[in-house]
Amino acid sequence: MTLHGSPPGLCLSGGTAAGMTVNTPLCFRGKNILAPMVRVGTLPMRLLALDYGADIVYCEELIDIKMLQCKRVINEVLETVDFVAPNERVVFRTCERERERVVFQMGSADAERALAVAKLVESDVAGIDINMGCPKEYSTKGGMGAALLTDPDKIESILTTLVKGICKPVTCKIRILPSVEDTVNLVKRIEKTGIAAIAVHGRKKEERPQHPVHCDVIKAISEAVSIPVIANGGSHDFIKEYTDIATFQKATAASSVMIARAAMWNPSIFRKEGFCPLKDVMQNYIKYAVRYDNHYTNTKYCLCQMLREQLETTQGKKLHAAQSTQEICEVFEMGDFYEETTAIFEAKKTSLETKMQDEDDQMEDPDVIKMAIRFDKREYPPQITPKMYLLEWCRKEKHPQPVYETVQRPLDRLFCSVVTVAEQKYRSTLWDKSKKLAEQAAAIVCLRTLGVPEGKLCEGENHLINKRKRGDQERLISRDHGEDLAEPSHKKANFIEETSDRNVPKMPR
Image (tube, rainbow, N blue to C red; front, side, top):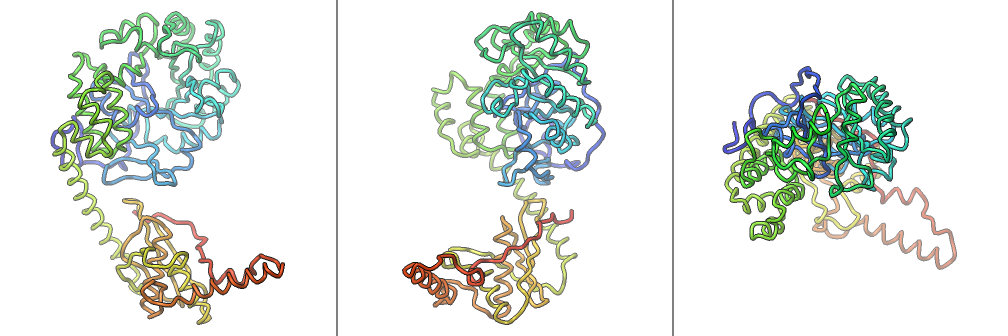
């Protein structure tokens, strides 16, 4: 199932992201490379750069602590590997197409954390890079980025730990120090850690893009070490078109060239035949953004970087006002593409859900009582839930308290819970977006099966609310008499939901 009108290589059939093969080690000599750029180096830009001729692409800097909170999830609808934060935001998304070309750049100031992140992503990327050049406060305040340049011992510790701890090539990206001698000495020390290459932004940490790039310093480094040196920082002074890449490489005597802003403005800078029309470039970028469900704010940001001086045109103003991926597509006359693509994904998602439901049914415990129930908190009084009613009923009937077992489905990261009451299991056949909602739905199934009130507003007088009111009145009386305001724990238990201590496992795939 190929997406009509999509860039080369976009296909919804074939091997999934789970089908991993052994990588060919990256070579860093004679390469044109997409630089790591915050908010720019996401999957659509990386794939587009590869389309236009980039040999290697770096992702945007991702902070080690944030990555360590992520779960690795295989997204079968998009055919991607996603690293998902606890708030369900995708922090890093990659796919089979770039797996042998993408270098994962992280921000880290701790060797063990860096190694943990590297091990987390190692099977999905071609290399690991440590950012040692970013001068921005969000990076340096944690001792990362350019802050590492003043701590060569920490640099050595991080890089040595990575080189010894993973099988993929390790690189780092630095800025130059105040003196050529100090810079060369630092790079020589870095070389001894065993890294595969070093990228050098030819500016000092306090310098900005408008300052001239110091090609002489990059050249001195290239001549002083044997590992590949990747020259970076030439967009302002040198690289205006494809042929300028070789000019910058020659001026720095570097092994390879890394391009940032010139590629951000028009990723077809990597194209040997010359630039493509900007309209075509932007439409191809949008196709990847839709194909890989890129967040619309990121898509809009990257497109604005490409439009640059055209942002004040009618099209630029419409782009700036867009509040969804669909609206962005309409700005660029790609509404039909958006509709076709989303329809394909919905059909694929439905097909996968049906398949998984069939598998669930085959492995389903026949003794579980099921109903198609979803919990809607708007139907219940504030702070009153079915779980509370079920817990109250169990205590009244002298049953053990309910036990909830909740699982998460990898396909869509939805939850399903089974509650056991008096040795009978109950569950909803509908999957929910959170563990709490799934448990409430299971409680409703149990309560309705037993014919027990569940606390809905339509049921009339609510005895748990009355208990709350009595408790509030008792506390007011106690306060008036100067008694201890703390509520006895045995009374609190009547009103506080029991929560399961069980971890939420993944459904078997």
